[in-house]
Amino acid sequence: MIGRTQEIAILKDACQSDRPEMIAVIGRRRVGKTYLIRSFFDQRIDFEMVGLKDGNNERQLRNFVFSLEEVIGRPLKEEEMPKDWLGAFHLLRKYLESLKKEDKKVVFIDELPWAATPRSDFFTGLSYFWNSYASKTDIIFVICGSATAWMIKEVINNKGGLHNRVTRKIILRPFSLTETAAYFKARQINFDHYQLIQLYMTMGGIPHYLDQVVGGKTAIQNIDAICFSQEGLLRTEFDNLYSSLFTHPERYEKIVEALATIWRGMSRKEIIKYAGIKDGGGITTILQELEQSGFITAYIPFQKKKKNTLYRLTDNYSLFYLKFIKTLPPNMNGNWITLSQTQSWKSWSGYAFENICLQHIKKIKTKLGIAGIHSQAFSFLSKGTDELEGTQIDLLIDRTDNAISLCEIKFYNDHYLLSKKEADKIRKKRTLLRHFSKTKKQIFIVLITTFGMLESKHSTGFIDNEIRMEDLF
Image (tube, rainbow, N blue to C red; front, side):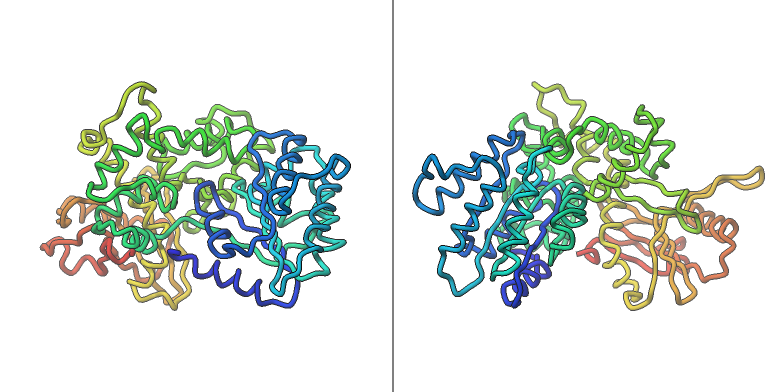
């Protein structure tokens, strides 16, 4: 298994503990939650059920019965059929009590949000099962779901019979660049860092998406097949992605689409305007759920307050889809080889590379030698005055060693040559940052590029630190 070292350590500890364990595994669709649990426990799972998408309560109960019949090796008798979830979990208890095992018994319920349909008594049955039986026996009960916000609200922060019953929590995140490179190496697919960066900008570190990539082709060829052919997985994944996670996905999609139009980020007020939705308490919930699910990031600009929070679209695939795939007619293939030469691609790639840098901020701090120094990453925004123009800085690292790293991020397909014009722009940003923020800290200029920087008279003595794409791996 690639990566997942912390998650595996949690599962190992659960197996070795002297208490019953309820483990909640959450993470977005396609990130590898089911694969992690099945791979780790292998043949040790005593009962497994996967919730049915869009199945009503009756079908979910039938699904439970089918799963139970599979492990007990016989069909249930008519008088054994459960009429509700209380009866279903009582049957599960009886089955587990009949097992003779030295190791902990393992129960795995996958896609719990689909199984626990609205107004069903699912949690009544689950609470009975845990409180009357599982909490007193040697068991590992794993519950898993892609609807991250739902899992946090209904399971981890449950206010009813499961309150404080979750003993361990695993939040499964997409692969990092390092893990992505290791994943392809394990598949004997050889890509250099630039090819990997292009794939990551398009689909992020989602294992199921990366699984579509084939060897012997460039990143551009793979993107063309996976995203732009009518048969490609990511051609239609967007609608499936949001509908599988949210009950009413339309409003979520509108917000994401609005955020895709202004890359610096939007305030709540701007989101309402550009998404064309009404204000209300529901907006706060939607924004929280999108953030918990890993699609957007909320951040407070440097020296601003919480009321100045901005929201930025940081899901790599969603950004790519809305920029290039959405407008394609359903019966027409796209051509990424052509699109990747356009000005639109250049502007998108710059922003997508910025996203990758923000997702790998720990690597940047390590390269700068400040991993052991407390620091925070910010953006910086200032409105202009009658005398001075405004400015925007995408990444500042504010450090407790009385310094600020001002990071300029450039995505380029070759070594980067800093021109006089670009150097003057960065100098102006530094001047405006010092003026508007009133900071007295030392400001270091950091240039983050793909292939590195060519020395020139405009960079020598001006650029304090250089970070290349390989430093992000």
